[in-house]
Amino acid sequence: MNRSDFPSKIDAHWTLFLDRDGVLNERIVDGYVRNWNEWVWNEGVLEAIASLSKRFGRLVIVTNQRGIARGLYTEQDLEDVHTHMLADIKAAGGRIQAVYHCPHDKDAGCNCRKPQPGMLLRAARENAHIDLKKALMVGDSNSDMEAAKAAKVHAVFIGKMHRDLPGNVLTALPDLATFARLFETE
Image (cartoon, rainbow, N blue to C red; front, side, top):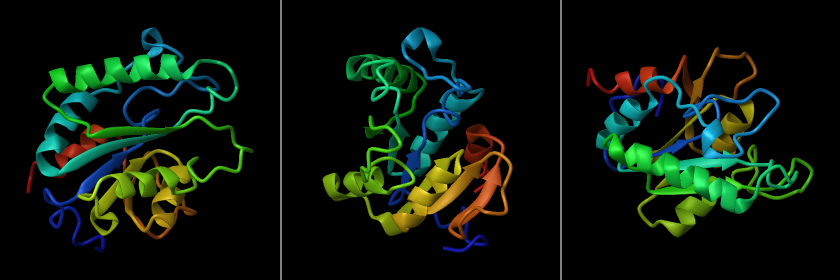
């Protein structure tokens, strides 16, 4: 797909991969969402996910969570945050098929921590309906874009476009709500 085809080629056969911190919720600068009380939805995200759930066949969250490796919160704390997050999404009319996370620190050498493509590849292995040729990653960091490129997935950058973003980036947008509005005119 090229930039001129986007977003008209997207239909229910496509999978939308979403980064979490900075895309769905407010990123805590130099910190981590350690519990639900620290979670703040980004403006318009719940409505955006509900809208995107009508366009994409599958929505999957892929998130680095190195705070676990650093001992700042536990797997159970993360699961609690995700349980509340998914309940809010469902209550707003959206759906998320799966949430994948990498609990490792930067120097762990794993293949799941973005910019490695492991979480995207695992999702495709575990779900026969995910075709990475018909997948799109939305993220707010170079590591999100690099993971998408390594998995051969198209990407949309949330934030101001950098010169050094990989060639698979279709566009840069200010937020997920703006991304969702692209499909309302289709």
